[in-house]
Length: 261
Ligand SMILES: C[S@@+](CC[C@H](N)C(=O)[O-])C[C@H]1O[C@@H](n2cnc3c(N)ncnc32)[C@H](O)[C@@H]1O
Image (tube, rainbow, N blue to C red):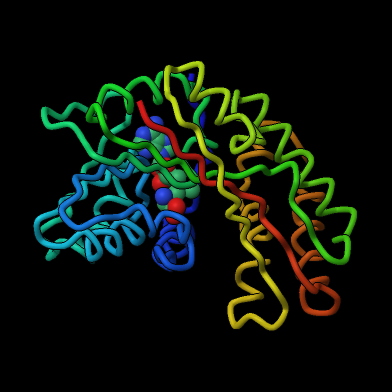
């Protein structure tokens, strides 16, 4: 049932490795406390997880799970020395743990699930009675570029969103989350804006705004008949020229949504 983009492992690993708590999950920081027991669902290579491990201290513990084995292996290689962090190759739907958690987090992962209800039910079953859940996710339909990118990339992006929605994934997961959490029995639902602004003056501007050339670099949607290879290549070429010559900014729309039992 669940479909996932066949990411180029090293490319995706590189993007995930560069993430930090401060930069990429900043709204979570105020609710982190020393000694917390935390589960990070869809931790990627553990880059944000390791920053959280530092904040919760030696009496705290964070477990990161991810269903892509190579991301977990890479995380273990880099952060295996951290005593209060454990990375486990597991799918959220199969994950079992005897101790319950104070906080369950999940960043940029629910957007890839076609069965969000079952994942939320599993998270609910793993949460302490006074625990909290925090999910950070995208509203892909609301992306903003300045100025408008080339028509070929806009077409590619439209097809990408269609490919996602045909596979049962939401293109506005952050907007859907409050209702999904309510339906699954969570309370005290709170939404916090967490947009990612990418400006020309930023040192990592070309790499960040270039995310869509990297997505278009994957041939999976061509193989599945969603677009021609010519359009895919044209979108990459024209978008890269646009980045070099005209691009000013991009805003990826995200919210952190929190709830309790
Ligand atoms: C976009 S990455 C986010 C990584 C990290 N949380 C971050 O914000 O950089 C989404 C991750 O979710 C993982 N994932 C997708 N479905 C999953 C599932 N059912 N159970 C566990 N992990 C899953 C993917 O392998 C991927 O590493």
